[in-house]
Image (cartoon, rainbow, N blue to C red; front, side, top):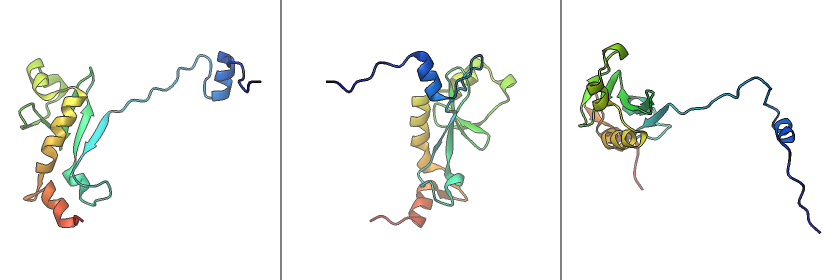
Length: 129
């Protein structure tokens, strides 16, 4: 004796999901931004010391903060308007997701606001056990 039921048909699956309408495409979901910070999510100063890794199309990601982008050697540059960006600029300021996250994590502790680094801000407000 078996408790297995026969496989569902596509119609049964569609009806069970309840969100598929013939002729209407399903909505796409895409991650376009990651926040990178040494400060915890609930820290009041987190937004000041956060770097964003943002999708810029064509599989390219930017490491961005305050209208600036980080280049491959760790220098911040003003992010040019799209019409002003040439391939050389894009090659220096756009990365794969993995490379962008590594770069953002590397510089996140050194972000400076009013003479204080992100690590200083963390140490000032968080005690270590």
